[in-house]
Length: 356
Image (tube, rainbow, N blue to C red; front, side, top):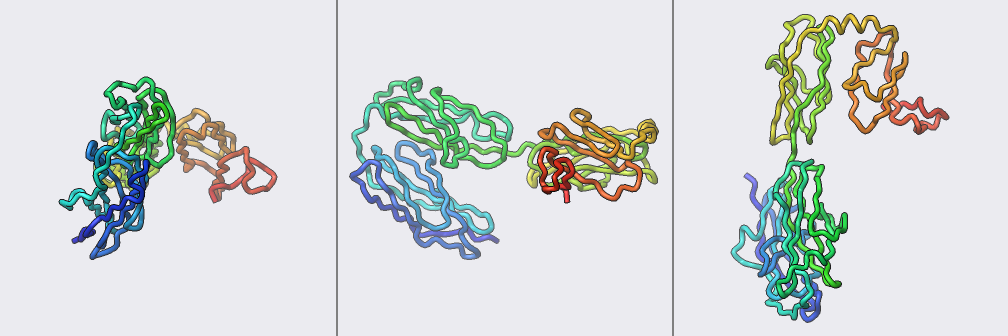
């Protein structure tokens, strides 16, 4: 049983409470993990006017500091502790105490943007668009969305990715993870920032390209998504766990009628089934090829074949090759990843053995 991390208190001290912005120092007291170590501390804050978490930052020590603008009200602080087993504990969930600054009072500039930042969905599959939007008003409640400037940090890494004059932005995440996108809204030289949380989940889409050569089944795994494990089944019987391809010779057994591809990311599992049938015609056609190098691939576009080499001119697309039907005394195959670059400095650009 994993024992969660514990703590006794979070000390909050304001260095320069009369200045704007002010520096707030935080220190967690009594932080410990009885059956391991605390590997990280994720700090964030919220306010008495907005309970949405903001300002996420990660440290390996139980202390940090924030430089924050003065507001009317209080800043409240919480920490997510993570131990060596990956167990996470949020102080906001396990403690009845609230750790905050004293009450603050500031004469608010009428032009200061007051913002509401949101996404059209809190959870999305990677590759699907996320639509961010901001509602902006001033201290009088007037809508100033059309006269403000927006800087967007879509992955929450602290660097703004783009700037717009529109209060909307659409983005597609390509890697599954929990993100904390941020927007900075500026109006008449005054700025306000806010974070939200977007959970980008994996999208598993099992796909395969099949070629039948007599009693031999050749399949290329063209699935999309972040894949951890793969299994191939012939009529329900597992025959391989190769992640990239399948070469299945059924000369001495019953030829299957279906081939199933099952993929998993460790949490979710998806599968697809493909019909198969013997094809003696393809085997006969292969025997008529005069060159020793016999090329079978998932596509014919962008491939130039010679008697002893292949040139692939579209490297941005995935290419699967099966050369097992080639003839002659072949000792090895060499792959030159870029025929315009002499990587082995031999003087020739198209003779490098990049797969050694």
